[in-house]
Image (cartoon, rainbow, N blue to C red; front, side, top):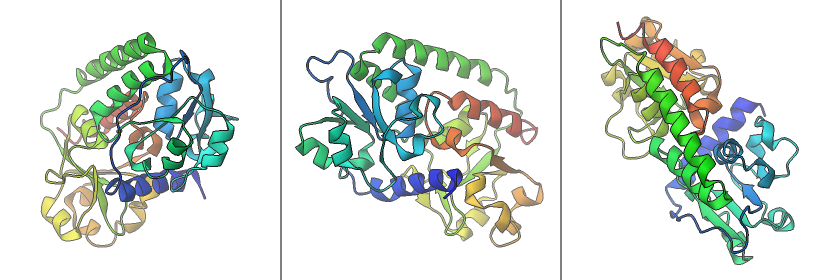
Length: 284
């Protein structure tokens, strides 16, 4: 299975299990461990930990972290649907970090006495909250605060470059058959807003949700945003896509690296710059 397919698989899996999982608050750092040994079950959290100087504390990572330089060579302990509890226990971590949708998958780790912290990562604000919490948990509080300040300063600088005449509406295509998109509270929706656009979908309470073709036709967004893995380009000659004004105007934005959009991590400004550059001509 290719990289893009793997990225899509973990996103879709998170969508399905998030409806059932219970949220959990981050635990305090394990007693006596100023710089705990950590297993990260989510690539975005792995990137956060590396960005705040905690790379050497990583003992294990997700299967989907192979493209993260600081994670290369580390044991892979989980995929989109399961966690290898026995393998994690053998790594002797002080702390395991993941997201709320993995609550059931990590129950065996909790029973084994391992500290587990599940951090929400659906929204833009969660991005900074996770960096801050990981700073506390890993013993890198100052580095985390500095990273947040730097990221937010970069974002303000990018926003100052917009100068859009209007805010074009964007429909995000996570999947084409059936259609899945993002709600206004999602991380991707926030990126669109920061880039000078607006999410065409305004009434979805979930971060990710299935969407009808009929409702999409009524929306008639100014642009479509998708990754190559969504296979949107292969379906543009079919309904409802071929009847969209955005398709006729060739306002179909295909993200070159889905990880940047799907992962609410320290590289989000790359996605923001990419969006600004492509929404600018649409916003004239």
